[in-house]
Image 1: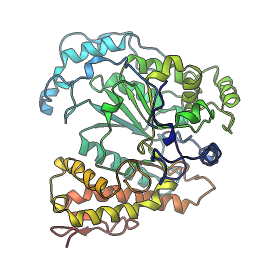
Image 2: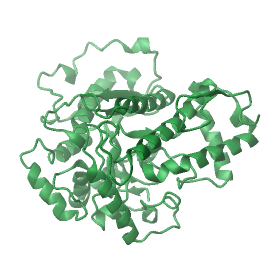
Image 3: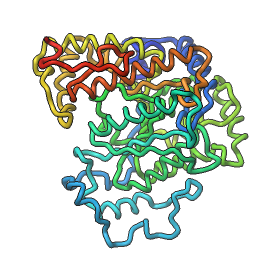
Image 4: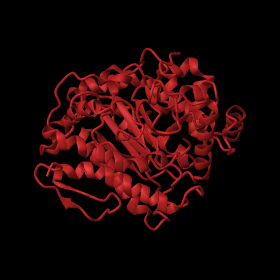
Amino acid sequence: MVFPDQENSQMSKPNTRFKASSFISDGILFLGGALVALLLVWSLWSFTNPNPSSASNFSTTSSTATGGAATSPTLADDDLLDDAPDPTFYDDPELTYSIENPIKNWDEKRQRWLQLHPSLTSGRRGGERVLLVTGSQPSACQNPIGDHLLLRLFKNKVDYCRVHGYDIFYNNVLLHPKMFGYWAKYPVVRAAMIAHPEVEWIWWVDSDATITDMDFKLPLERYKNHNLVIHGWAHMILQNKSWVGLNAGVFLIRNCQWSMDLIDRWAAMGPQSPDYEKWGEIQRSIFKDKLFPEADDQTGLAYLILKEGEKWADKIYIESEYYLQGYWVEIVGTLDGISDRRVEIEKRVRELRRRRAERVSVSYAGMREQYLKDAGYGGGGGGRRRPFITHFTGCEPCSGNHNVLYSGSSCWKGMEKALNFADNQVLRNYGYGRLDLLNTSSVTPLPFDYPAV
């Protein structure tokens, strides 16, 4: 196994997380891990909230389906409506979308389908296709503002996908009646892989996670030799044996046979399994900081990395160079300062103040990146850069049963601030913005040459 940046494997304060020269002792790491563990245990594990919370790189060659490579230009939407008459795996009466029935030879089946649909082998903006998958519980929220928060959280993900040319699927039903809570996402992810053979990556994002950098694009080229990308710290799994060494609330998984096999193995620890209780005992016997008895998906993945690493670890990329998901308590207080720094840079650089169409707005991100580096804000996060994803672990926006370590008010205000921070980036292309990140309803027209005027 290769661990190029284990010094970066930190989960404490954002101002040191990504610096190669910084170091935090295991004792402090465990204090941070214990805090996150307490927050996660309190959660009621709603449908889409698997809350259990370097670029450590577990390895070399990918076993992916080869059909995801771009081989032809994308056609207009009207040209994608016709299906090929030739038989495909969809015509097989034995094929089932249910997670209880394994799929074999998926790479070959998917490759055959892509050969019959060549215009779908690249994304709408070129490169590999990505499908963001998220969702919530089937019933209405108990929290009076819960449904409003879920709507805004969904809008946030829709905005990001529109800007970057990604597709999105929102699910609000249990696809397996016994796979509830944090386990509910795996039948959805697996069904999405079958429903979208044109997609190279399925990107699961918990409903309570906010995308707070609308410019940032997933560095998919970095993961070309891997099939699962998850936020975490390798040494916390391998040396410390901590269940919070990774977070399963946000991950990228490649649409290939390896991933099908991983989901089958992973889900075998879930509540639909006759060995569910046994798996809970096994997880707690190995990961001593796990406080609750039930088997969970996050500890399950840590177990597979630790105990079955020869089979799985080489294709798993543990990401900590940016906030693939970041703990909201660390992040929310930094958002005003991040906004102020960007405004100061834009005041000095006329090109960054130029009005533009939303469709080309991402092209300005590269230009802004260089100025951020020149101003000393290059690399990582640490409260200086926009965090990519802010995860409101423990807030439970739908049920309202937030963790007792902080108030409901801090959760809802934190969500409002993060959502408005992200929405300001979208509204900028429409000529508006919020001057106060805690004032959701009030927006102001932005004058020409803003913010220099």
